[in-house]
Structure formats: structure tokens, C-alpha cells
Amino acid sequence: MVEFLQSLQQCWRTHGWGSIELDFTHQPQGFLVAKVQNSAFAQLAADSTQPVCFLEAGILAAFFSQLTGQELHCIQTTCESIGADCNRFVLGLAHRLEPAEPLVTKFDHDAIMQQLCV
Image (tube, rainbow, N blue to C red; front, side, top):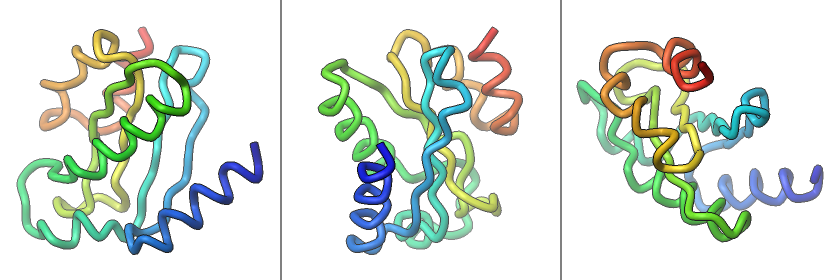
């Protein structure tokens, strides 16, 4: 697992997408959180009013869907383009992430995770 994580992090940096870190805190509830700092995608969309890194979310969803053999969905809960310290993405099954979609512009990441994990 350590080698996998290091390879993913190096791949992310090599492509110029920033640095990625995975947070397994919510794994027992069926969610994986990815944190990306210095996102190239967010830099291109500076001064936005909502998370805009759809390509980054799509890459994460496709990658982890292939890895797990399940169709995973990804939502962005924070974005550097709107002043957050990093981009945060939550990966999980689509029907489990659906309730979080309308919360993204109203609540912070921790509050969204609290709602999802209830």
C-alpha cells in the first residue's frame, strides 16, 4: 500500500497536477477523501464562487473505479479557486454521495462529511 500511495503521489506531481494525499479516516463508512494542494486545475479557474475542478474529480473517479472494480463517484467539497487551503474530493458510491451534492456550496468539508457518515 505504501508503494502504491507513493506511486500515485509521484504520478500526480509528474503530470503537474499538484500534490495529492489520501485520507482513509472515513473508509469504514465507505468514503475516501483525496486532498490536492497546488492544483493546476484550480489555478486555471481563479476567483470562482464554487468548486470547479471537475476534470480532477473525473480523473479520481475513473482511477479508483478501475482500481476497485466498482463504479465510484467523486464530489469536490473544497476548492483552492475559492480560497480553500486545498482541494478536497470525496469518493464513494454515487447513491451514497447524492445527498452531499447540494451541500457543497452551503457547508464546509467537515460538515458535509458529518452528514454523509450519519
